[in-house]
Image (tube, rainbow, N blue to C red):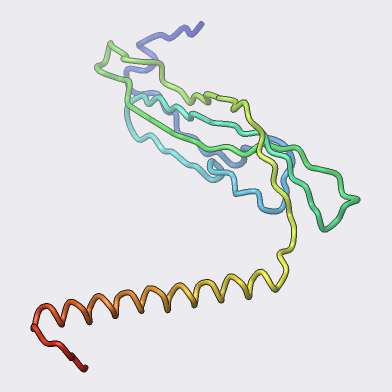
Length: 159
């Protein structure tokens, strides 16, 4: 239960805040930086209500390079935020000023694995990209050639 005296917030209610660090579980290689770290909100006037909707996803990290290393159980999260001035007039609030963190836990688990991709895989990917470029350029060339023949009505068009 929140008890609030409206006279205490008639001049405003400072809900300025800085989130230095917010993490759930251990860190590991490849963990995306925490989206709320360094978040700073400053209130100059009024009474603000901030909501941070945090969606937590359980994550297991496995290092296949070092089979002796144990798996790391952690959480990744995403955030949606909203903020509004709830001081309507000197004697009326449209909400409760403050900073609120609302958590939602996802029922599935993400498993990340660290492994090296062989060099042959890289070479194959590069060859596929080069082959795709040649294929697309050949299709574009044929379209231009046939379009030119139809447009100009020439049987043997040499460029």
